[in-house]
Length: 330
Image 1 (cartoon, rainbow, N blue to C red):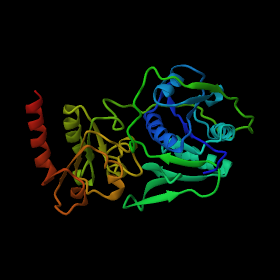
Image 2: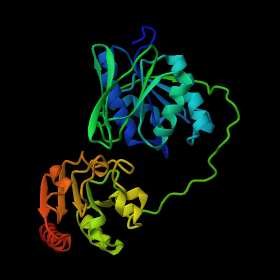
Image 3: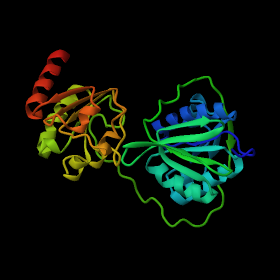
Image 4: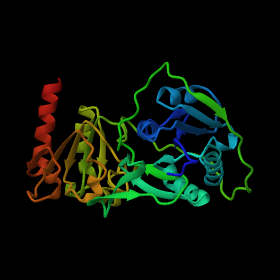
């Protein structure tokens, strides 16, 4: 890597005044890379000054926290965020810059990479230093193959990390970090701004962090049959998810979709009902500690991934399973 670039910089994400889960995952990966490269781990947080967020970044492993307290950065704004991140990279000259492969990161990372003329690898599930060079691992062809990517040239290397691909950094409450306040660079007038924000109505756990996810697919046949999944999910303290087919049919919301074009989940228990197991779906739930599949087709691809599988009609299997769970839990 370039001799005038050193260390790792992660771009923190903040929601409602708190760090999002992807930030702790970025810090865990960034800490390992920084130690292997022999440089510091920095974290950039925008829209606020020193406070609970900066203290939390220090506790999660950051050596230096860069803050840009401009109020215009309180909400994600593509042009302003691009200016801020690019200016921070120019000022701190990191070897590696990490962002989350989130709604924000997927939009921001390519903009920044173009602005600073850097290579970018998106949707990485692993990053490591090999012989002093950065290597990334990412799924390609819908998750059927894992590709290893490398960066060429001098300067910073940019990558986005898939949520749930890494364990979050462990918190060390007494850990301290250097706080550096940066100025918001002067930019052109923005062409877009957020007018309002509406939160989707939700009851009970959401699939992102639920310990149990009960998902349904095309095999359930109708939207009404998802009530059966809700009954089991509520009993287990979990959330209801589904496949792309269920989302397209209008049986569940897009916020409940699991898969390559939906949410990536990593619950203790994932129960797939009437889901065939296409790679696009499995890319979103392969990290589950235990995966249970119920399907009438013994050759369904999902049985290749399931820890436990039941070949049978879900309309008979699921009620019996739900009744047994209720018996054991009451």
